[in-house]
Length: 66
Image: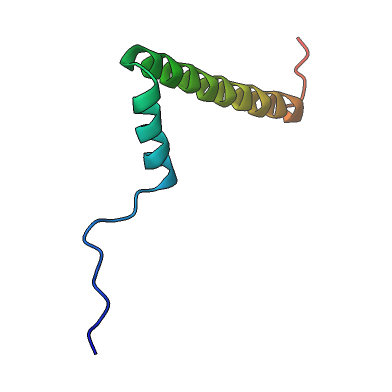
């Protein structure tokens, strides 16, 4: 009895498959614009998280009266 053949190429990840479909459907400029927009969303989320953390620190800090 022979062993099952080993697959020579890895099965692409879901992300890789989405990028392949994206490259077929969108021009390069559209891909770049979409990725830039997503990068902006992630940066906005990071800044919002930083603001929340700064607010928590300020609320824990005792008020100083001059």
